[in-house]
Length: 499
Image (cartoon, rainbow, N blue to C red; front, side):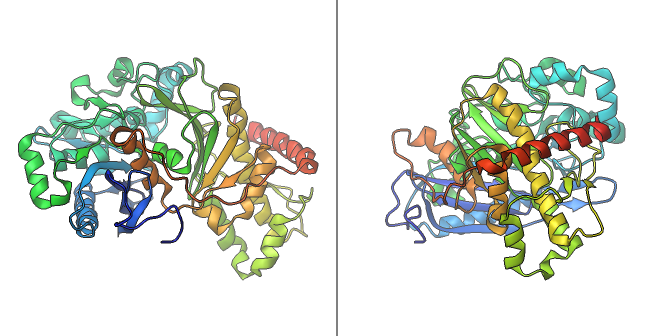
């Protein structure tokens, strides 16, 4: 075992949960015990999206279904005679699969990154009061959400829309194929942009604007509302996977919710920060804000909770670009770390790191990266530091709006590959946000969170094990004037170019 947080099969405390995660690069799975500790080895099947210059970003939903079967095969083989009490699934959010009356897919799975509905986004922004839409659904008009995507599909593939029986997320599709249950999780539904953030049910007016009928959408299941399987389907699953006989299956969870819970940010006291290819700041709240700031989203995730926050398109992606373009991979690692850990300096270029557009806080999807203050003497490592500061300032912009509606957070837990690959970012984040930042040393926090959400129903009275955490990085007071000035300059440049 790598730490006290992990356990082996012999030490695992029932009930066991089999957690599944469909991400952008792979389908993964892990078994967890009642304390939320990972048991044994993780299973993984890699995949990739089909992409094209026109904005295409797709994956075959039946391919994912096969991958999930492989992952479950691998995990159940390692359980011997131990039984699984629950099966929980999260997937990347804002996906869409259209199916016919027999449940067969009429389309590929359109991912959150598919940008072909740009014209429909423009049309909807002309038709709708976007601020009112945000207050109703917690979302803006954006290519990731279903209103624009279904509009685009109706224009490009009217035959598909004519034959459509149901509009499903990827998780809804694969769970229906496995269990026979037509259902969606509250959080998966909320990421479509079609859910009323106050009632946690489909928002009829937005559904109608999208061109979808309410009867074409699956019933919404809250976190404590598992799926109902027919006796015939349950028996079929038990024949294939005896260790799952009698297991409770849960509706799809959006990966953003699972990631936050997996980091330990499961209530109003803690902000969860994701630092991977993209990034986000999120707070799980019991009291849904009456009024949302313009830069944030608010997804209902169950009957009693909502996830409030904002997202960045480019975190690891921005650093990868900087490393390749500035050739900092040829710089001695110690030298680059020294520059990033050193005192900030006024000659560092100011970078607005919008390499693939902006989500929060201005929703300028066509924004691109901007660099100012580069001189003849600017070294590559200084420009690289500017990119790091730009990312931290982007998080700070979200945090400033987040505090206006969720002022209670006392802690910030941060996870994702960037926290391991470039840990120096965390101190810059702490300084820019004026908030202590604690790294969470756990692999696959999203899988962990998915298991914890299922355990709320399966083992509500059992204490959960805390994941390993690193030392907390606190803001350095003497750097406050520097980051205050940088924040103000960032906003001025943004307003001049993108407002």
